[in-house]
Image (cartoon, rainbow, N blue to C red; front, side):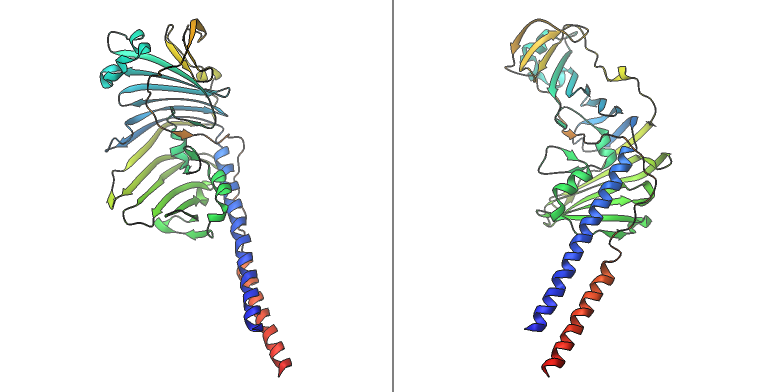
Length: 361
């Protein structure tokens, strides 16, 4: 009985040390990754999306980012979408071919905005809460941001780690593919989610995997196949490949290719001003009204309650990063003392058992 109690105590102490080391590693990687992402203070790039399945209907676009200000434009099924996020608001603008969506002609704001019988302009204003259903954000694809079932869209690794620290498994090193990485696994529902960090790229995320326990479940991965170093310790992906497997079958890959990338170069503040055509109708979800605007985006004429809003192309995303600083040093490896400490505790428990046995004899 005494032997069992001693062994149990040693096991619990070792388990506690392992838990502490895991938490320490998780915090270390979250801090290192956040610093790497924050080293990108401004960004401008173009992105091409090759997707044979046309899953989301988005072929590519252009992106600007400076602090918490974002401007992006993308083509969705042949329609031009623009969005600006600044001052706590998302301002979205869509130029759409009515021929692609005949039911759009039923909306009064569409009828009022037809150009040559084909196009209409429609704007929306909504409060920015970290997520927007009307934004395509290549930043998230490049960062391999993590999908979180408890939130809308994607979140940074640091936020994901805080939310799911209890589901995290021990950090391990891997050299799969020839590139040393550190990997954190999370057991979430019917799947194991793995985040791979690249020490050679200042601990940017190299790959994210979701492996379902079910043979017919959903599995996926998002992997950076190449990084470019724009300044010492400042990395940004050049290519990201997304793979999906569902119902026992592989689906077509989705490939993001980034070009004309400019990192930490000045971006004029005027880039983040949305340009409207005078006379278009804006659906303002902050006020719950719709109204026409002039060239300065000021309301003209009467405002009326929102009854039916024209449906817009949707691609949910979340932006959580606010770039500020740079780090170039690899964080110190934590948890090195775990194995010797565990062996010492087990040895101590064994010595204690021998001493007690001799006394009893």
